Length: 222
Image (cartoon, rainbow, N blue to C red; front, side):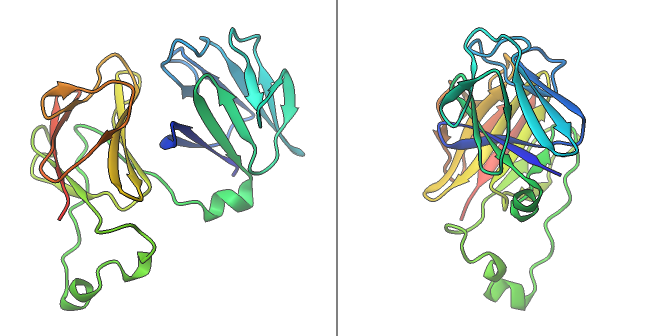
């Protein structure tokens, strides 16, 4: 299936496979792709999936919809096209490109993530041999409160989304220099060491305390 990769300021915040004939994008919570930002109209745009491909339609949005920098009303999409709505960029991947793209791991408060696999002598010697291109050691999130307290999940993917859709969502994204925390949607922004973050990505360091939607977490990176 084709896939959309949503990012802001170079930080991937969500991914979505196109499985429906009609996929709606906008600020309102009933959209398939919800972007909680005032620059995005309540019903901003829609993607139509046909047998011959995917077509993007702007729904007379206030600030317009752009494809590869050009304002459009209706536009057929091609693999690698970049849709722009407000400050957000949405990369369109066709089926072949989507298969090659790394899938997102999603961890939600209240959900018990699987425990990390035990490290054998072989994996301890080269724990990331299969992902040598990754920058530095893989970090993890340790859940400190709620039903999943005591569990730990590795941040081995490009982006890990945490939170409750429609209420509060944040993303932890792996960059070349390390990891950053970004607010994705909802009025309840995450806290970083007790301080609510803004719209800019916040660098994460070993031992940082995070809290979102009542769940406390510890960022661990050795």
